[in-house]
Length: 236
Ligand code: BEZ
Image (cartoon, rainbow, N blue to C red; front, side, top):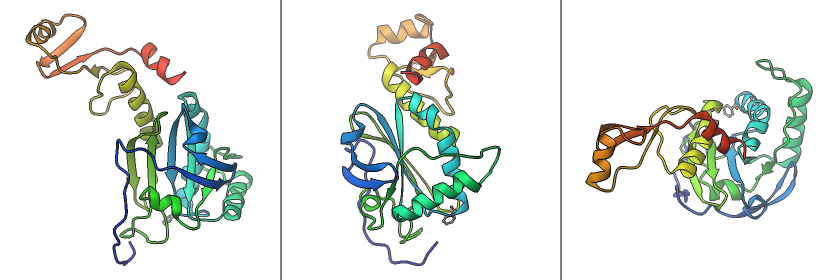
């Protein structure tokens, strides 16, 4: 951690409209969220190009990009480095870096140059208690209506868990699609939580284990959501 004065910064919150921006990226200019209508977006930041943890993360994101795209989600990266640094770093990753069986990895999603920190500041990615000059490892889940649905922040020293990043995306989509909630450690194929019954009659029929709903008590009922239903969300 760096020893900096903490200035007040605006932090987007879950449920807020995602701040709009135009930016230069490794894939050309983007106008967000206009260019990303009707899609989920994961907008994420990394502290710096040519650093090891970030390199391992980019290789993992790029390797999993198709999986995210199949779930109707686009990836956008950001750091406060410039475009030529981004291009040189991504070329180095492709040409030279082999890590955990990943090699010849091409990053095809856009990586924003944000030297002015304009976008990073809008999204609260600069957290001066951690670093005033680098973005933390932030992950924003933005839905097709442009609403921020989840945020995860990691410090500079800890690489992200990509199973969890993917699980959160699928979990948000499944919860929306089937009007359910998801219990601790839910994974696709696990039982899901149905909303609390609105009347005693419904609660009673649930407690009697009707309609395939299993209740531990009136407020805690689950049902099966088979992979075939989850797959309808994943492969849209
Ligand atoms: C890294 O990605 O390795 C890293 C970046 C900034 C600070 C510490 C580690």
